[in-house]
Length: 224
Image 1 (cartoon, rainbow, N blue to C red):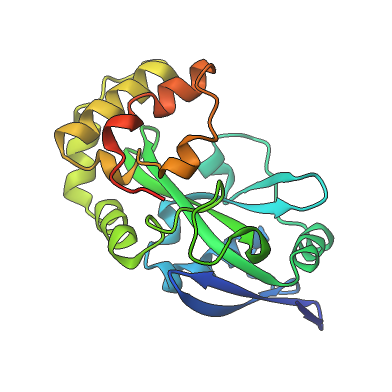
Image 2: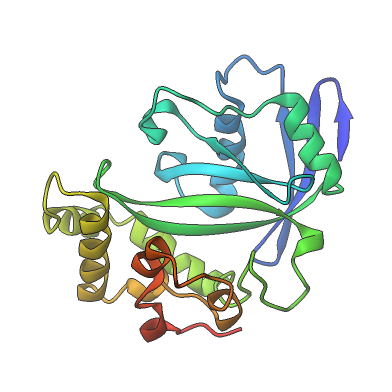
């Protein structure tokens, strides 16, 4: 990572291509710096930033993730975890300035829209050519990602999905309905699939995990 004139530079690998990312901490255009980061990611991924619900950075010290949401509107909360210069520089430095961009996607009834969520995983945690808990090499391909991108950018499809949802239902009911709708449109494999390496990492004694991934066994289209 390079730090010069209040700028942070790091290298990002996405779908086999490398990109240099520069965060300008003094750019007054952005109230929240993660908005600047997502704007930089938009031409790389081809997904408009308004369809991105958040981004997270891996914290090597705590062996966990620090969550940063794009906007107050996106998080649907008055609280806002904004990207902080010192902390983010620390994350980047601990990762030696090299990241692998991973993602997951789902449908948000609050927006009536499919969305994407990014994770910056240190390259040191992603084995070359292998699957791991952080990344599936089969999902992180242009063919797979482009299908998700097409779904997210398909306004007509998103309207149809939203029209089939029951309004004002609880979280668990919503998750079940979305799963059934994804099946109906034959796109569930792009949202609920896990490779076998990742699948084995989840605790299926947990109710939340069973609801989220309970039927994933039927859709293991990608295998590590």
